[in-house]
Amino acid sequence: MESYIVFGLVLLVVVIGATLALVAPRYRKPPTLPPPTEEKPPTPAPTEQAPTIEKAPPRAKAPPAGIKPSVIDAPPPVPAAPPVVEAPPPVEVPEVEVPAPTAGRLVRLRARLSRSQNVFGKGLLALLSRDKLDDDTWDEVEETLIGADVGVAATTDIVGKLRERARIHGTATATELRAMLADELVAALDPQMDRTLAARPQDGRPAVLLVVGVNGAGKTTTCGKIARVLVADGHTVVLGAADTFRAAAAEQLATWAGRVGAEVVRGPEGADPASVAFDAVKRGIDAGVDTVLIDTAGRLQNKVGLMDELGKVKRVVEKHGPVDETLLILDATTGQNGLEQARVFTEVVDVTGVVLTKLDGTAKGGIVIAVQRKLGIPVKLVGLGEGPDDLAPFDARQFVDALVGADA
Ligand SMILES: Nc1nc2c(ncn2[C@@H]2O[C@H](COP(=O)(O)OP(=O)(O)O)[C@@H](O)[C@H]2O)c(=O)[nH]1
Ligand SMILES: [Mg+2]
Image (tube, rainbow, N blue to C red; front, side, top):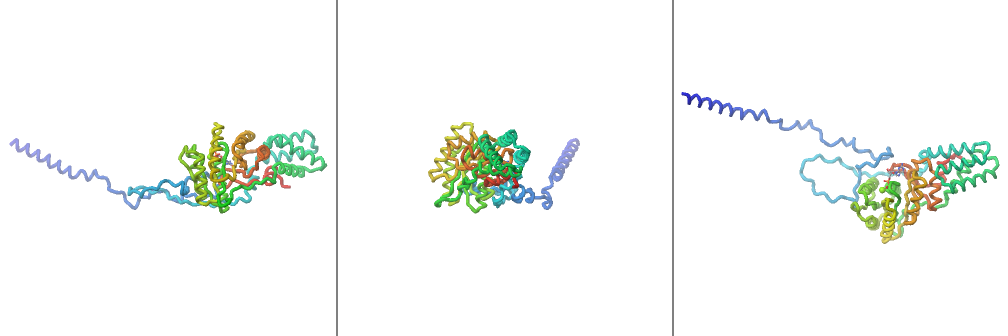
C-alpha cells in the first residue's frame, strides 16, 4: 500500500516536471526580431554630414571627408567586401573644389591689415597733420615705422627721402605727405622686381618648386594654397610630401591635394625626404603635369642636420633637372627673428622667392620691406589667413595702399 502511494507521488512529480519543462521556455524566449519597419538605418542622415563644399566658410579647417585618394596615394586594394552585415560607411563623394580666382585677393588685405592700418595709417596721418614738422615729429614717424617692423635701415632711408621731399614741396597737406610716404614705401619695395612664380612647365618637363622654412611657418598650408591657385588656372599639379617626420604632415598635404584633385606622392613615415622628393618629380614627369610642388620639413633644432637634408633634397631632385623655384616661407608674426632664420636658409638653398604668411595676424606689415631689403629676394606671395584661398600675389602698390590706408 505504501509503495503505491510512493509510486503515485513520484508519478505526479514527473508529470508536473514534464509539464513545466514544456511550458517554461515559451515564457523565457525573447521576441524573435524587432518589427522591421520601425528600425532606422544606422547611417547618419547624409544631409547632416556633407558640407556643401567650401566657398561659404573660408575659415573652416579642411574637412577629413572628401579626400580623394590619388593614384600614388591610394591605399592597397581592399579585397572584395566580406558578407558580414555592417553599416556602410558614409559615402565619401570625392568632390573637387573650384578655387576662387586670384585677382583682387590683395584687396582683402586692407581689411585684414586693419590693425596695421591703425599703426601706420592713423598714427602716421596724425603725425603728418601736425602744424610743424619738426625733428621730434620726424623722430616719431621713424619710431612708428620701426615699430611696424620696417627695419631701422629702411626706415632711415624712407624718412630721409620723405623729409627731403617735404622740404622741397614747402607746404604739403597731411594727405599729400601720406601720399609721398606711400611712394617711398613702394620704392623701398622695389616694384620692378620680378614676382612671377616659376610654375610653368619648361621644355616639356614640369616646373619644380621647392618649399622651405621653419616649422609652423606655413609651408604645408602654402603648398596647398599654391596648388589651388595653379589648378584654378588650369594647371596640373603633383605634390611631394617630403616632410616625412610626421605622418600628419603628409596627411595634411594629402587633404589639401584631395580638395583640388591633385596627386600626392608620399613615402612611409621616416622615409628619406630626398627620395620622396625624387619620386614626386619622377611622377610629375611621367604623368606629364605642369608643376611639382615639394613640401619639406623645417626642424631647426639641429641646424646642420636640417640644412644637410635640404641640400640633399635639392641635389637629388636636380638629377631630374633644375629646381625652378625655391620658396622660403616666413611667418610675418615672428618679426626680426624670422629674418635671422631666413638668412640661414638662403645660405643653403638658393632661395628665389619669399612667401610671407600670417600677415593677417600681425600689426607689423612693414616686415615685408625689411625682408626684401635684407634678403634681396622678392616677396612673391602673401598669406592672409588660414582659409584655402587666403593667398595673394604680392603687389607693392596695393600692399602699401592697404598698409597706410591711402586713398590718394
Ligand atoms: N592666420 C594665418 N594662419 C596661417 C597662414 N598660413 C598658415 N597658417 C597657419 O599656420 C599653422 C602652421 O601651418 P603649416 O602649414 O602646418 O606650417 P609648416 O609647419 O611650415 O608646414 C597652421 O595652423 C596654418 O593654418 C596665414 O597666412 N594666416
Ligand atoms: Mg608642414
